[in-house]
Length: 367
Ligand code: FAD
Picture 1 (cartoon, rainbow, N blue to C red):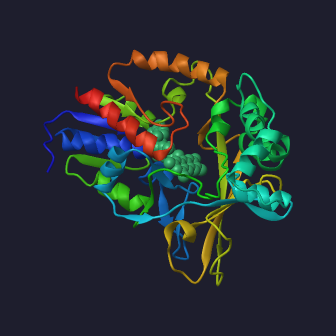
Picture 2: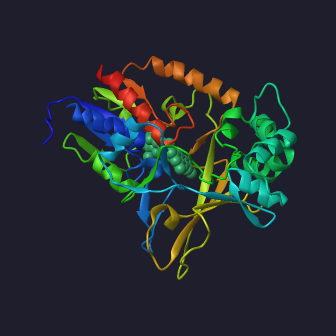
Picture 3: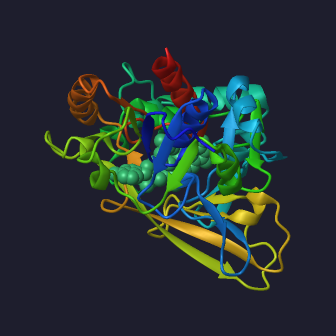
């Protein structure tokens, strides 16, 4: 039983940021209360069995990958893993090609037979050198030239972000490599795997501690006036914490269209197929590839980017970062509150990076 006389720390959000901080504080002997306005743990990584018994990710496909052994080991205390290397294909003019672009993509698309040196020379010939490289358009034109840019990136980016690549910071496109070899894995990190029994089960284990109480369907706004907490760890949107006093931080949202296909063993060749130039959705993911689940049917999700809705992606533009800095300056004056996570730090974090940020936040708190 937790010691009820201990002062309680409030944690807003039961995603990676909130749950990792909660566990570390609980292990250090603190009493914590985790609240989430949603009816479940795991934040955007939440997975569940759909009504047909297929394990799906409610908020879109989540693939765990990291180069950080420390983070891998931390999570491995709470789950076993299933080795999984994600693969993606991009559909151009009705045909599927490996994505990120690699040598096989070039050879298949242009009917070539390039070796590694040939692929290097190809990129050198078609690239449009840019100096300086500021936008996502600069990044892609600078490395693969206009034709590949238009086939794989331009329209996908417009759909995904509602912006032209020239309006997005270089970092967005720089996340996607271009290869002269035939490696068709989406990620090349040392550790790539899926939690063997799913993300929600891993989060259950993280939060399973006598010093941790978890409450669902509770909004921070319902508790903030009441006060009485020794400290608050806030993982929600930073602009909402300050009542949007400088204006709303822009986010890109998504609508997820889940579908079950009975009696279809495999719907598509790999985990995710991108549709850069066709349809209103950006991509289709088939979950059985990710989870390895055996089932007579299969479940897929289509992602439709949209302006309104839940805040999923901070939009990496200079003016948005400047707006964030104004909120960050206010956050520094909130001595009893720690801001951590994708929404609180307005950063395009992957899961492993959020774990890293949360562990660093706990260290500062405990010091
Ligand atoms: P969240 O998971 O968003 O958790 C924050 C929680 O706070 C939420 O549950 C929310 O309900 C709660 N909350 C917010 N405000 C309040 C409030 N006022 N009161 C109470 N509760 C509140 N990363 C990868 O590494 N690999 C991937 O393949 C990958 N795929 C992704 C696909 C999509 C479509 C998206 C959107 C993200 C993807 N990510 C991926 C990123 C990953 O989802 C995030 O890095 C991670 O979930 C962030 O964790 P978090 O705790 O910061 O935020």
